[in-house]
Image 1 (spheres, rainbow, N blue to C red):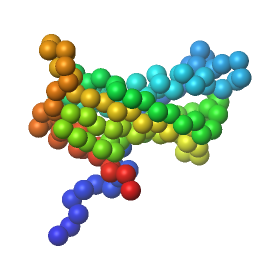
Image 2 (image 1 turned 135 degrees about the vertical axis):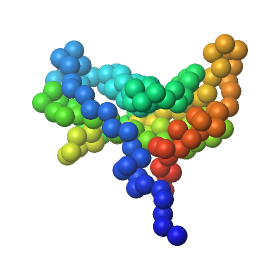
Image 3 (image 1 turned 180 degrees about the vertical axis):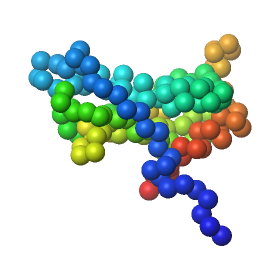
Length: 145
């Protein structure tokens, strides 16, 4: 039986962007705090940009429970294009883990992980993902080796 799962690279969401002048610190590279904004932009595009443009409302009411970032290489203002590649490494009933690489074709500038949990905004408490949400999240699932 043929493998119907796409290769890992096809399960990554890719968000390209340009560095802004204000992202650069006195050391001449992108300030570390700016990376959280890059991850947020990529995450919003992944779950609210592309799908909404296609008429989907895939995931609602998520909150961040944890962020981790490892900085691998200084990101200089001369780098373009720069991108954030994002994928899911673990999916559970009420949470999932996103992995990210901030990179270009030559370097990985940062690797990061976020844990997101499903949240019922009206009730003010955690909830489980719906079947539709689990299906959408599963499109990006690339389990860790």
